[in-house]
Image (cartoon, rainbow, N blue to C red; front, side, top):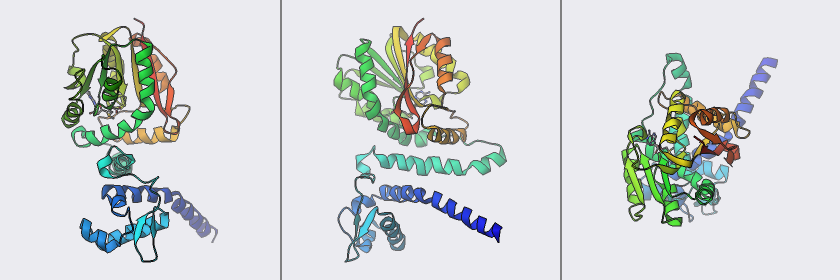
Length: 330
Ligand SMILES: C[S@@+](CC[C@H](N)C(=O)[O-])C[C@H]1O[C@@H](n2cnc3c(N)ncnc32)[C@H](O)[C@@H]1O
């Protein structure tokens, strides 16, 4: 009897623990099918099912869950409409949005975490297909721009920067913002993913001072030395055994007194350990993605590669996300 009670009690705990997942799942489905747009004004579920060509009972069930979670409400005529607009992801066309982050979590992170038992038993890793997932990942990273840009801009002014290289520039969000504020800067972005690089080229075609190069950074040699090198959300693509070489090269192509900034979640940081360990668990399921660095690892690399490192500044505390500055010393 006692054992049965204990089991029941534990089951209740795990059921409760899983409730937050339901909120993410509901928001993910709503974003992916643009349902929060469909139900912006009160609508009958059958009308939306017809208009969007969706299976009625599943849509009805999704609406039911939404009402239970208070994402949606049902009026006295049975029509459904959005209740918590402020919290829910916006329309797909307004991407990048919080919906892109939900999509990445649901389609990439959660399935990878669920593959742990199989991967452990088979003693293998999966392969990260950068061509397939590159666009999603590049887009979600841009959500950090808002928090990081003022710090990057402060560096530009403080160090009288004239040229910037963004390694793994994604869709060139930082470069575009920089070009708008500083038309005199020489700005270059290197991006390995062809589709992402094309988007970056398109997004920056009106800026004469931005050049986007579709290349692996390992194959790229700039014509002139560069004052400021940005390494934003890239280090998990670099094998820890190769990180020192990577920073030695960064040093080689950097002007004297140049700087680099690294944006990354940090392992074992003062804040956000839950998030950074989950992130690492995801990366570790792939044979071509690597653990995020720790502050100690970066400090050691900085010293060996001829930089001094400043104390990391938190960008998102609960996410363990930091910006770290390296200054070239030799
Ligand atoms: C997570 S995204 C970050 C994008 C952007 N830096 C940001 O923070 O918003 C990392 C980007 O680096 C690119 N990348 C990865 N390895 C690379 C390499 N060896 N050379 C150039 N780009 C690379 C990926 O294709 C991806 O677009």
